[in-house]
Image (tube, rainbow, N blue to C red; front, side):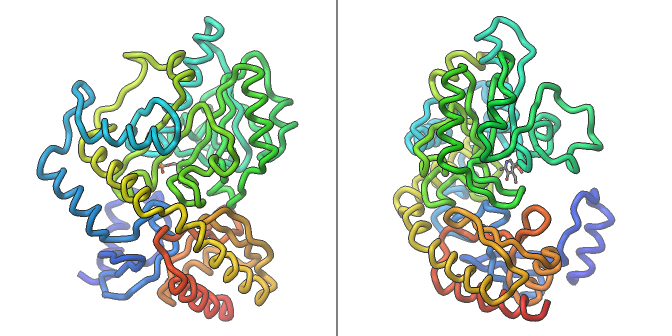
Length: 397
Ligand SMILES: Cc1ncc(COP(=O)(O)O)c(C=O)c1O
């Protein structure tokens, strides 16, 4: 079947929840993807910040093949070795204490919300607590995660959502302080806002939040689903700031292609929150994803991927700044490490679609931001190639 045949079939069978780009992907190698017609694409999206090692990494692929031959799934009624090893590595990388593996980022947020509510229930002896989340945030599409997502457009059709959520302004400590009450159980934010348009948190904001939460026995929850796993040049973005959360949600590059997330917490948060019977999942943390997570963390540490990001990111920033200087409709660059956004005053969806014709995959964030979240293994030559292709697209747009 040819490309349009596949696309037609997909539109007849899949629920139409995405306006997909006209691209049927077949396989990948390194930082390149290939469609069913054999056309090559330089990938600066990494499956939305997932494929940290690019595609078809031999070591990773061998590892998951081996585990698939051995044992895929057991349920959480029993122990399994890969997930024990994976959680040890995640603890070491984060300096946090307790891990719960989920199947997605959304579920990691759900778990973090439940942990915070239970913590406050233990603290106060009753339920009815509130969460302070941020405007322009994104935490997922389930009812709980959507309730803390500060985007009316995503929320409106699904009201009423989970009650007890208030929204403050990102990087505005006073707006958070104004919402704190004896009911508050948690403050939740992305360390670098992703979908909202690539906004890194400021140092003062995170430090202020840490103090505010400590003073009021409120849990500080960081969503590191997109910005975590070495993407910003540290294993977790909060490590740039030296501000440690009580609970952290991660996913995406945690599994580098197998569906896995986690919420990770300090002993203090764990000791006073979720207990046997409070939370569970059939698939979460099965041996298959455990092996993948262990391998991802092993490779990231051994190959010093965060340091590589720290070296290559300034070059990406420089090239993006050059494009901004050339085109007056590109107005600003924001980001941290290999999580960069360029504000574009022309329709960003059109830019992304035209880029595909040039063999370049980029995605958008918010209404007017071109988002660059490439595989973490990119080199200068890939940045040059991206800039050349994008320059052609921008000149023609
Ligand atoms: C910051 C953030 N939180 C949560 C999610 C939801 O994760 P998932 O799509 O794995 O459920 C995403 C997904 O894009 C995200 O970027």
